[in-house]
Length: 265
Length: 276
Image (cartoon, rainbow over all chains, first blue to last red; front, side):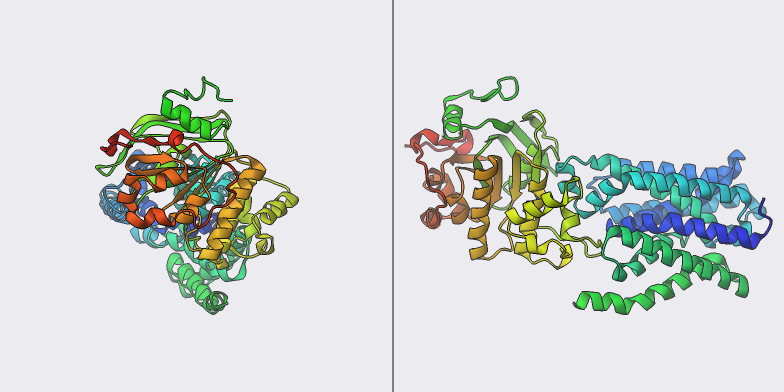
C-alpha cells in the first residue's frame, strides 16, 4: 500500500476537496450551512461510539451522522422553533456529548485535538479507501439527483408542482451531506469541516454563469486550497484543518473584488 | 365531458349553474376543504372547481386563504378535512407569489425553464416567444425586472404543456400598463391552449375584467359568479369597500359572450345574509 504519509495526505486532501466542493454549492444555494455544522459537531459522538463498540471509527462517525441527519429530516417543517435555533441546540448538545463521551471511553489514548482540528498524519490506508468509496458513491448519487436538486434549490414549490419529489430529494441530499462530512472529518476536523463546503462555492461564484461551472470551479478552488493548506501544515508543523481553512479563506478574500464588480453591473 | 367517476359534479342547482357558465371538463375540484394552520382556521368548508378553458379568479383580502387554497389544489399541502380530486394524469403549471431567486445560484432564463423538464431548444424559444420574453433567453435570472420575471415564470409554467395553470398574484411588481398586457396574455393563453387557469389576486378591477368566473373568499366562499355579479354582491362590498364594485368594467378583455347573471350566482351558506 501507500507508505508515504505525504502522498496519503495529498490523496486524502484531493478526495475531500472533490467530495465537499460540489455538494457545498447546494449547501450555499439552500442555506444549509448550519445543518452541515450540526452534522459535523456530532462527529465526536461517532468516535466515542466507534471506540465503545470497537468498530472502525469512520463507521462510527458515519452511523451517528446518518442518525442525526435522519432526526433532522424527521423534524423538517416543524414550526415550534426557528430551524437555526433547533440546529444550534442539537449541534452543541452533540458536541458536548461527544467531548464527554470521547474523553470517558477514549481516555488518554484519544487524540482529541486531532479530531477537532484535523490530523494529516492520522490518515490511514483505510481512510483513503473510505474516501475513494465516498467520491465514487456520492458522486454517482449527486449526478443522479443533480437536476431535481437544482430545481428545489431554485424554488421548492414550483419544482413540487412540476412533479419533483421534494421530500425524497431533500432527505437524500441531507444524507449525502452527512456522509460527506463524516468522511472528511479526519483531515480537517470537526470544528472546521463546514468551511470546506461553503468557502470554495462562495469563492467560485463570481467567475461562473451555470450551476455546473460553479461545482467544477468550487472543486478546482478547493483542490488548490486543500493541497496548499496541507503544504503549509507540513512546512510550519501546524494543524491541517486550520491551515487549509486559512488558505481557502485567503483565496475567497481574493475573489471578493470580483464578486463586488459582478454585483455592481 | 365530466366523468362522474372522477368529479361527482354537478350535485346541486348552484353547481349546475356554475357548470353551465363553464362547459369544459373539470380539471381539479376541492370538496368541503378545511384547514387550520397554527390554531387558526384558514379555510372552512370551501368548494371549488376549475374547468378546462375557463379563467377562475380567486379574490379576497390578505390572509383570506387564497394561496393556501391553491396549494391544496396543487397537492402541496394536505387538507385538514375534505378532499381534492384531480383529473387523471393532470399536468399543472404553477407560478407562486413573487419570490426572490438567491443570487448565489448562477442560472439563466433558458436553464430556469428546463429545471424539471427536458425539452428541445426550439420549444424553449417558442414558449418564450409566446409570453413575449424571447429576448431574455440568455439573461441571468437575478437581473430580471419584476415584470420580466413574471413572464419568464409564466413561460416555465407553460413549458410542461399543463392543462391547469395556477397563477398566484401574477401582476405583482408589474405597473398598470404591464398589468393590462399580462392579463391580455393570460387570456390569449387560455384561448390558444384551452387550459384551465386559476388566478389569485387581491387587486380587483383589472383581474375581474379578465375572468370568466370569480370566487370571493375570506376563509370561506363569500360569493361567486360572473365578475359583474360578484362586483355587485353585498359581501364583496363589505370586504373591499362600497366603491370597489364601481371600478369593475374599466377594462373588459374579450367580452365576447354573455352570462345569465342570476343563474351563475352562488352564495356560501356562511355569509349570513340573503340575496334578492
